[in-house]
Image 1 (cartoon, rainbow, N blue to C red):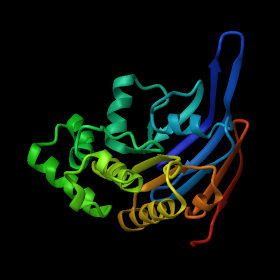
Image 2 (image 1 turned 120 degrees about the vertical axis):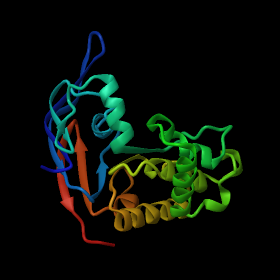
Image 3 (image 1 turned 90 degrees about the vertical axis):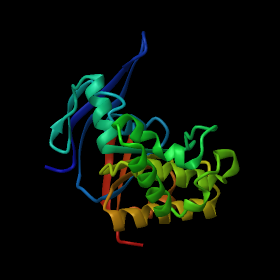
Image 4 (image 1 turned 135 degrees about the vertical axis):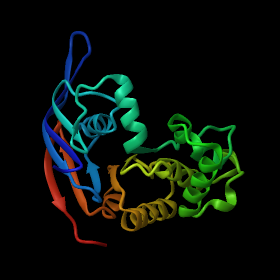
Length: 230
């Protein structure tokens, strides 16, 4: 079985008088180590799918297997444990705590895992080293550029050695040059560390870094293409 396997996933949002069919029978398999762009216009279902893959939401019907475990109907506590062990998140808005240092932001996922203090510091410093920001470990977010803040967010996503990184518009708040640098960093991490990386984007120039492009429209997959390396 693939690392990520979704079978006939349906997601319906009940908004009172209106029902929104956000996902309409999605089948998808993603192997370990893939680098995937999930594309589509606003309202196409790509963010809904990402929330389900990230165990932040549950489908109305269908099955979702993550590393051979059916997580479709797990309790909130079980979903939280899986998120912490298996998934790292990178967001468009960075989502860093403003009053803590880069190092402390990277350490956050390990607080919930009960990692000893010395090990926690060392792992966080290694993650910052991997994204080229070790010399900025004591800086706060307001002392970092947008690109540097996103590097801290990527370090935080990878610090627990989660096999999957989900990135929601990770370059949306960055200029073109910095966006390319962030995508080059994610490409290197995928190639050197082997993380499975899924990126939501509506930008073809960002998606071209990925080896596979999956396009959504009206809650359905309309294309799924393997791409030649750039």
